[in-house]
Length: 197
Image 1 (cartoon, one colour):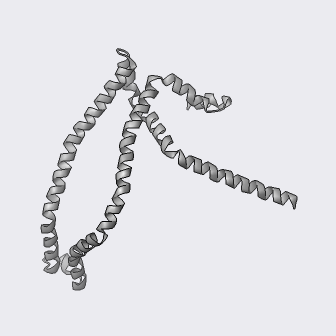
Image 2: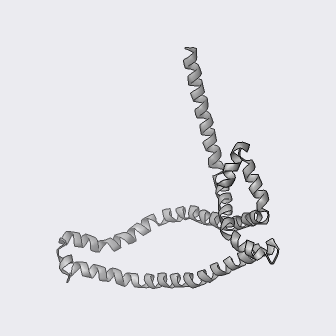
């Protein structure tokens, strides 16, 4: 009886510790993702920084690489975003005409494929655009309420776009110290293997 109670107490304690560990990892997930993102970003730009570091200080090398990346990103955004906006405006202006044309094709079909669809189904399909308008009015308030989490997620992404390069810059300024600190997280007998990895 005592052995069974000890086994049950050990299992309960192990489950309690496991739940606590999972909660801990859930709490630090965002920070860990930022750290991993910074390591990955530093790894990507390290060759360019190292090459520039041969002729100038490391901080200047990092700033030049960041300036080039920001310039390329701004250039790509200035080329793509206006075109997407223009396409969306054109689509919004053409949408009523497209819906009317779709409804007309379904109700007075000239295609042999559409004429094979039963009349009730064609009427249902032709009525879908007006049903869509009713759904938008009905669920519009709910959509507005759900927009706030999306905006908060966008703010989180924007913050990550600032934090990750800053952390990557710190990593690139003193990579030997970061390397030593990371190895220090592992037991001494495992460090050589972790270093190779």
